[in-house]
Figure 1 (cartoon, helix red, strand yellow):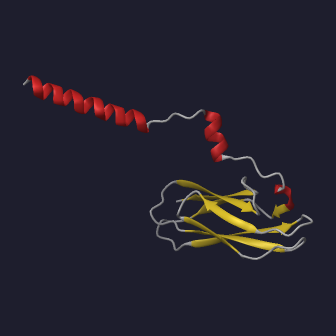
Figure 2 (cartoon, one colour):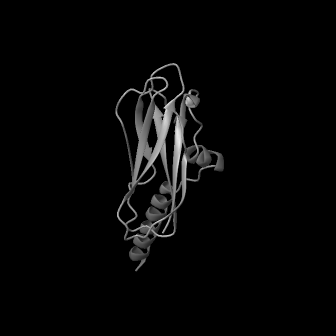
Figure 3 (tube, helix red, strand yellow):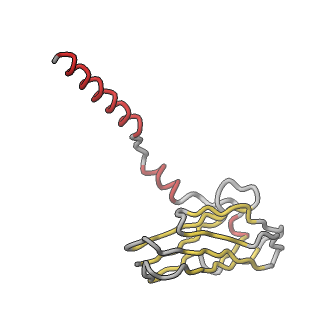
Length: 145
C-alpha cells in the first residue's frame, strides 16, 4: 500500500511539473505588442483606401466571400508585398505578386470562410513589404454570425 501511495505521489508531481512548464504568463505590454505591433517606419508610403471592413453579417452556411483592400504606392520607390500573415485560417489573404511602382495601385484580397464560426469574429492580416520585419499595415475584417 505504501508503494502505491509513492507511485501516485510521483505521478502527481510529474503532472504538476508538466503543467507548470506549459503555463507562461506574459505581461500585458507584451501581449499588446504582439496583437498590435508597431508599423514599419516606411508604412506611410503604402496608402490603403480602407484598413477595416466592419459590420459584415454572414451565416455559418454562407459561401466564402472575398473582400478587397485597395492601396496606392505614395512613395518614391517601388513596393513589393513580401508576405501576408492572417490571424486565422478562415481568412486567406492574397495579392498581386508584382512590383507596385510609385503612384500605382494594388489590391489585397481577403477570402473569408464563415463555416463553423459563431458570434463576432475579428480577423487581422499583417501586411509586410520588402524586407521589413514590422508590418506595413494591419488590415481588419469584422464579421458577425
